Length: 155
Ligand code: GTP
Ligand code: MG
Image (tube, rainbow, N blue to C red; front, side):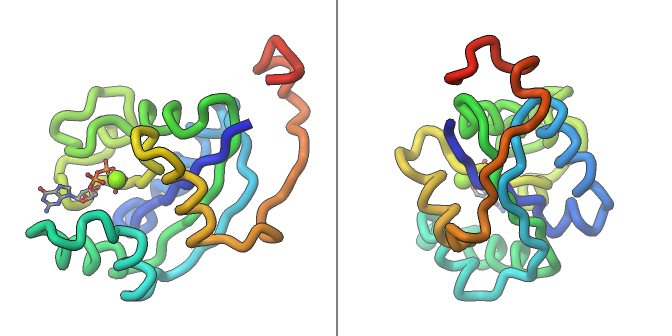
């Protein structure tokens, strides 16, 4: 099964949307295998958003992601990275479809509620998991409803 890195950003935590995010992913059938409520420091922020280092919005982005606590998570499931991105919606909440997390809760590009690994960036999911978690902080278990989510037990 694929694993992906997901984060409730500082705006989501401050607005009490952490539970809503967890609920949506949980109800979809994705499995929570790691979680850490934490404050991101400057160094980790610059590493996490390294791909945007030369963008004009980089400083703002780092300032925002370090501005308050976040909930960093690892979710597991079939095609998890791409499925979470679909549930998140477009980067700019103004363009995100209703029914998506950003489309239902955001209005501003700079404060867009949730991060999920990019499925178009090969290996981004595992790289981000490794940046935020030690392997022994991730839990292996079977969810009791898995037979009712996946037809094939070798999903
Ligand atoms: P993340 O899940 O946060 O990585 O979002 P994303 O993958 O949908 O978008 P991307 O990686 O391209 O950009 C990272 C973050 O930078 C976005 O979530 C936005 O908050 C922010 N961002 C992207 N483009 C702009 C921009 O043009 N201006 C500003 N202010 N912020 C931007
Ligand atoms: Mg991104």
